[in-house]
Length: 473
Ligand SMILES: NC(=O)C1=CN([C@@H]2O[C@H](COP(=O)(O)OP(=O)(O)OC[C@H]3O[C@@H](n4cnc5c(N)ncnc54)[C@H](OP(=O)(O)O)[C@@H]3O)[C@@H](O)[C@H]2O)[C@@H](O)CC1
Ligand SMILES: [K+]
Image (cartoon, rainbow, N blue to C red):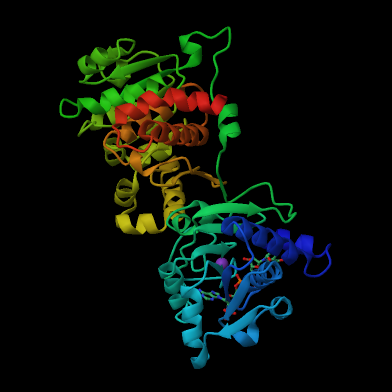
């Protein structure tokens, strides 16, 4: 962002970029309020350009008849042009450090229709400072809608971490491009809905994070051609389930059957349960080594302590997805030594165990955790969660999946995901594509299946076809 801004600013008249940002911001605020005339708007204004955006947008709203009050966190370092513009438009300013203003600040926020958070943008580090934190509390407690400028103040733009107090917004209006913090939890939750305002930047080709959209997924989904037979479409092997957890095998197969592979081979002790539900499955109890032709393996869901199967699968020179118990049983050196791609799919608890840290610290630093795991194992890692992340071992953009829903936090949902991703691996997708496309379809399927009501993992597997059609349509 910084580099792209510098490059563009050098070619534009001074202040032009900020005017573009402020115009987009004011338009979004106006749309949110429905009408502007007579509305009460409070601007929270920090000492940087983020505050400048808020002031210029406030001036635009004041010119259309809103009553605008700016709350200045450091009056002596407030963006001078922005403040002058607001005053010219009839807005007023209060200072948080002035004792006589404190009560007026509180009153203004309490009775506002809209609070615009221009405390800090991409120039911020750490949570809100002690003078700014009470403003976030007041804004949250008031009935006003809260619009964050560029980012909710207090969240980390580059990582999505939240290290202290932060603004909770209903809408974030961001400039130029999405920042990782707007896509990755926990910060994403603070952002509310996100609207992107194009300010004309040319951005570098390689992003820190990227989120697939329908068209991207449609272009990656395998479609059988006229020449296809089941081997060309790919055979996925599922080594999962145990006498204790036969359901994990059934659910992984359920996901695999909807993932585009030409055939699903099941290996393990739950063959009867699998066949009873899905007669099209090829089953065997001879172990992965003697299973016959397979183009990609899934190992681990419900596997209990079957270390033998995990080792046999990892020894094969085809793409392998390791999930659940498999993650615990997989030898790190064996994974690192593999030539074919490996895709590991931990949730936060499993990732924490692999990294030797607490679950909380993985959840607080998801981007760092997924990168670290990919690096340590030399594998592609899909970290499940409210925003699922997929990282490649060699670096490059981390894929963020935004289709998930909290209804997906249900038993067996991960087994369906691993079958689905394994099937896509067998169909020839790279580990990064297979993981991120599977997460996308799985999230969408979860939304379709839930449709506002609780659901089970088998419902998700049954909705994968609807998700696929939705993406292709
Ligand atoms: N450049 C452009 O052309 C365009 C830029 N644009 C806009 O500019 C924004 C970036 O502006 P920026 O670089 O001025 O930094 P900004 O985010 O306002 O914050 C810096 C100030 O915050 C303070 N501060 C730091 N941490 C803090 C904390 N935890 N809690 C509280 N305060 C904290 C810090 O104080 P200091 O450390 O100096 O005391 C410093 O003064 C960007 O997000 C976008 O909105 C758009 O208009 C498009 C065109
Ligand atoms: K902000």
